[in-house]
Amino acid sequence: MKQKIALLVISLLVFVQTNAQCAMCRAVLESEEGQSTAEGVNDGIVYLMAIPYLLIGGIGYFIYRTYSKSSVQKNKN
Image (tube, rainbow, N blue to C red; front, side):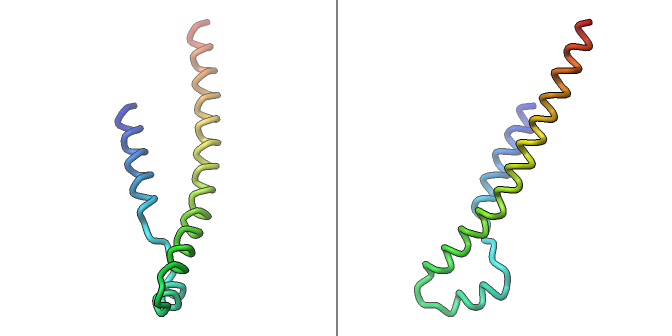
């Protein structure tokens, strides 16, 4: 279990460091002298991409917790 948690934490840390621009956005934003707009677009894309994963992870955890509680109660009886 500890290995799974460590793998999850490492995956999330690597995920945060990725650049998430499509080719068209990258070409337009690289032509700009100041890269502040490009960084803003990158942050927005990563933010929009992270929310569904967090929601699915939360739902998965809730389902796991529900089933693990029911299996523990069945084993006690």
